[in-house]
Image 1 (cartoon, one colour):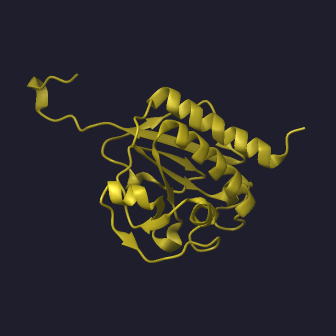
Image 2 (cartoon, rainbow, N blue to C red):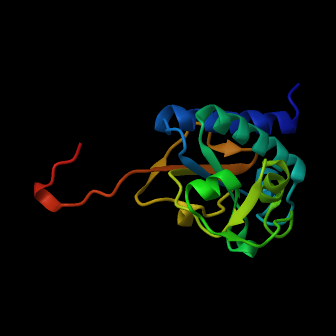
Length: 182
């Protein structure tokens, strides 16, 4: 019988694999993920965070991102102004500015706190323009997506009890009625 943690891992993998199949992100692209582990557990956002749930989700996220050769950016909660935990390699590759803060379970969120422990060389940045994103539990990741964000309807609509919303981005269409687009 599958445990709750195994189910959460498997649901996260299902979301990630469907996202990849539809979007087909290229190497080096950034995926921002916001997550309320409270919502995953069926509680109101910010009330019952869980490092155990965060570890299960992060494990699945990192395994898939490694296969994609992409970068993962984990959004902190509102208490840290939705800053992001990233690998130093990502910060340097995209010329992002590091900020000084240490996300913890109840100020930053469980997933961000877990990312600080599990990433190889974690840093926190204030903002990013990601190529796509996955929002687990209505954490409002839109501010960290490139323009123009396109909603993506996934078959796997939840992780645990949290609603999953996904998006990819495309270049802006400019030029008016005589413009030609590919």
